[in-house]
Length: 192
Image (cartoon, rainbow, N blue to C red; front, side):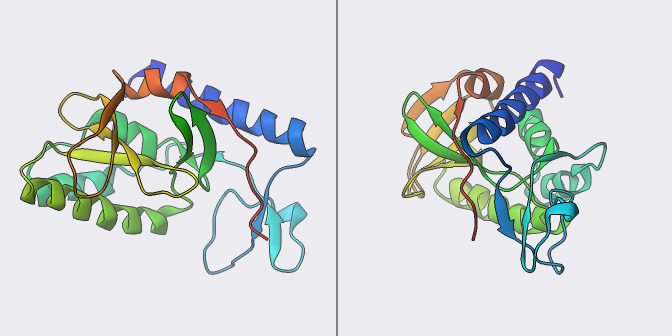
């Protein structure tokens, strides 16, 4: 993991929280599900089936084992930037805007969410392999429709806009750090 990428992710998440507090004077609200625990829930704000939440550092809680199993199953290494991204914060998706439009950044809500993500990433990589395309790993989807996604090229680390089942459409940045640094945080919608 490069320290500069970690710093860029931290900076974006901090700007996102600050923007949320400035726009709404409170943190976002989500459904509280005791069967789907997360360090993101602010227990002191819990009321019935809702609670405020905010992204939380994983603080050494590594998703390394998940990526190790993926690499073993796939037979190649996963780009370090992808490992860094999904090992940085526990969070619901965070909305942002880039030069090309609005998007939703994907994070893990809890450890179990990592297993769901692993299955989706493997399915995506196997589809790329079947189509004889370079392997990519997604970390965001476009908004409002979600028909396209944004991914890291596993070989180069470049950031690409993609559509399921097709070759990458457009290069957005030379690296994940560069891409994250250009993002503008948007208010986080409540899940009421």
